[in-house]
Length: 329
Image (cartoon, rainbow, N blue to C red; front, top):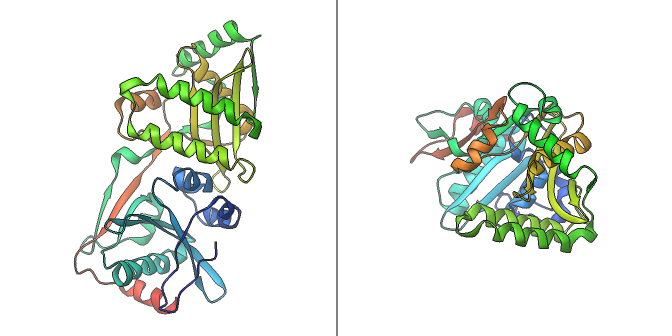
C-alpha cells in the first residue's frame, strides 16, 4: 500500500490487494458517504474487473486522501477520492494533474457520490456533471427490513413465514467459514447454471468477486451469513458496515429461487444477526436491469444514494481554489 509521490511530484498508483484493506480502511470513514463504495470490501470485490489501482496522497507527513485509478490505458477513469471534505479540492486537483501530465487525458470520474459533488461545486463551464441513473444505490430503513413489519412489507413477511413453516426444523443459520469454500463454489455453479441464457455480464463479474473473496477468506474481515437446509447450502449473504453513517452494505445475496421465502429469510436473518443496529441498509444498484429494479423496489426503499459522472471539458483550467490546493500539496 506504499503509494507516495514519485520524483515528478505525481502520485504512484499500485494495484489493490487483500493485504491493503486494513491499511486503507480509515480513509473510508473520513466523510459521510451513503453509496456502496463507502466500504473497503466493495473496492476489493470489484478490484480485478475494474483493474483498481490506489495511491495515498500526502502533504508532507499528513495523509490527504486515497486516490483511485481504473480502466485501460486508452480509457482511464478515476473514482472520487476518499478524503475529508476540506481535502477534496487538493485530491481532485492532484487527480486532474495526473490525468493531464501523465495520462495525457482529460479527467473522468465515475460513480462520484452526491456529497462530494456538492462539496466540490464544479463549474458547469469546465466540467460535465450528470447523474448515472442506473448506478444509484437503494437505501432502506434498517428496522423495517429486520422486522418486515407494516402493510407495505406484508407480502414479504408472508413469504418469510411460509419458509419458517416449511423449513423451520430443517434449516440452520451460521456465518460462512473458510472450510465452506467448496460448498459455496458448488452452490454458485448450480445458481449460475440455473440462469441459463438469461445470465447478464454483471452476474459473471459478481461471481468472480465472490471467488476472489473465498480465496482470501482468512485475510479479509467480512460479515457473512448462510442458510443450510438438511445440511446443504441454499443461501448466503455478504456485507460490511459503514461505521460513520451506521449503514450496512449488502454486497452479495444469493439464494435458491425454487425455495419459497428463502430470499426473504436470508435477508431478514442476516440483517438481524450481523447488523442488528444498522440504521440504513444499502442494497446497491440495479445495474439497469428491469427484473432487479422491480425486486429492489418491492422492498420499498426509503431513498437513494445518487452517483454522478464528472468529465473535464476540453481546455478547462484549474479553479482558483484548486490552484491554491495544488500549491499546498
